[in-house]
Amino acid sequence: MPITVTPTGAALGAQIAGVDLRHISDADFAAVHRAWLDHQVLLFRGQTLNDDDMIAFSRRFGELDFAPIQENGRRFVEGHPEIYVVSNVIENGVAIGSLGAGEAVWHTDMSYLDDPPKASMLYAIEIPPAGGNTGFTNMYRAHEALPDSLKRRIAGRRVKHDGTYNSGGYVRQGVTPTDDPREAPGTYHPIVCTHPETGQKCLYLGRRRNAYIEGLDLSESEGLLDEVWQHATRDELTWYNTWRVGDVVLWDNRCTMHRRDPFDESSRRIMHRTQMKGEARPVA
Ligand code: OGA
Ligand code: MN
Image 1 (cartoon, rainbow, N blue to C red):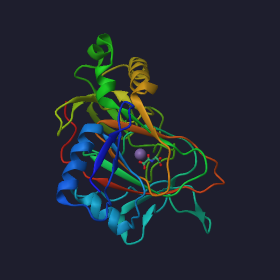
Image 2: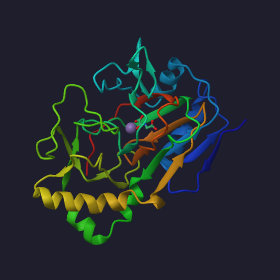
Image 3: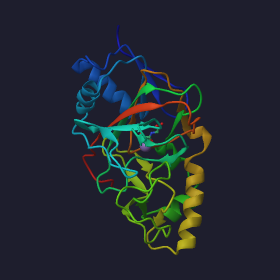
Image 4: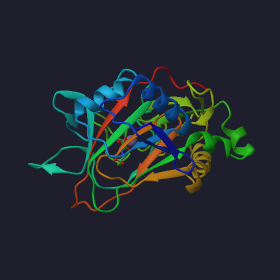
């Protein structure tokens, strides 16, 4: 079957059919790579992958990051430090993964690092009967669509990407939480970045909580961030995946953000994730 790329029709995302990610030719991989840059998020349905398969496919994009250790524990698969488990399942009193069953607020992965991952890939192993959908927002369009007055106010500025909380609101391991954005641990990146592969400008916001625009009064920073975030997360910039078991979703972490709807905590959701290392610091 030839590979096909079908745009979602929303602001970003495309579904790829005709590939088995366990056996993908160089030509098909080149088409996938091109589609990933063009559509920012790719959905592959009906995949059957073990952790080695996930790692092998992910490595075609480059080197992998190790999973972050969060929420006071180990949240990766024994023998596979590259695999991060996103799950609400508790086994023998211990959570097997991160993020629980609550909402995961809009964010981009691990942007509190100097060199954030360029891509992340989630594979659905068990999904709840309802809820737990994952949404993505197009940060190229978010930048494009900003009113000129807002563009001027953020021009040349850097924003702090908080390292205190993960997207589920849990405190990262080893961090003493503070809610003063000026004091919180994190990394400054330019608010408007240039994508290293496409050369296009995008907004790069990371996450809202404890964000801080360098050089502004706290209240001024809060006000400006609220305005920019409101524009960047409007429904018309988003696309949501309604998960099925066997779905693989691969996103470009440099020009998208994502969030997750909450789901009933008595149902089970198990996803495995890999992350591809960034090759360059985010630059203006
Ligand atoms: C992630 C993440 C959301 C989800 O894995 O980085 O934010 O839908 N997951 O589980
Ligand atoms: Mn995430």
